[in-house]
Length: 60
Image (cartoon, rainbow, N blue to C red; front, top):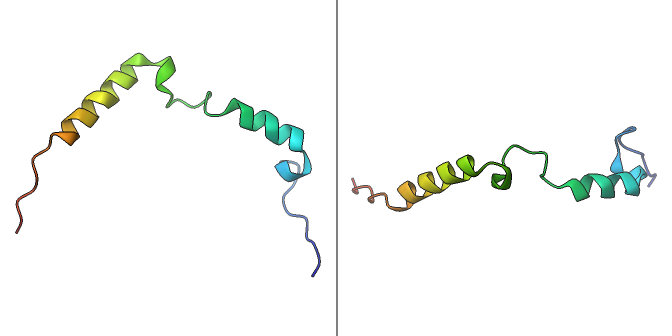
């Protein structure tokens, strides 16, 4: 069995330091973190509360 190198210059397996740097950033750059936007967190909590109090569907 021969080992075939996959990927190109963006392959993290070839550069563990680059992979560690990317992993340490986590989801900080994503728009979904509620720490940076309390309004989004408030809206998500409101939606979750509405869904958790939903009446069960009648069985057909």
